[in-house]
Length: 121
Image (cartoon, rainbow, N blue to C red):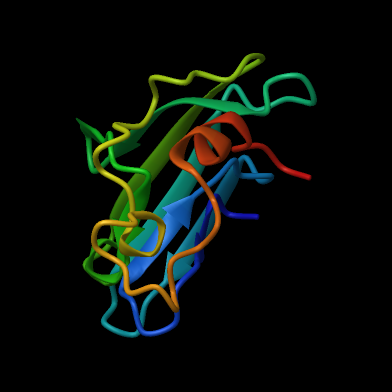
């Protein structure tokens, strides 16, 4: 519900999806903090419009474990309609990119499905 989740065991990538919380903080063992914020999140604004990671636009549909453990801030800007241009379709996580994934971990999701369904259940 924080807006990211692991998809492929053994991978260091977390796929982004719509957060259900306006703000969450992860206090890390190394003393760092990773803050997640969902700006403009309402019952109607459930779709990701854009993502900012540590003050810079983030076009990948995933973050890496290193992004979390190094501390920082992940901001989701939310809106009422899907933004199909939010994520770069060429920058998908390992588990969702057929050209990179072994057949046994290649999920049946397509890029179009992922981008169109990035909302909370």
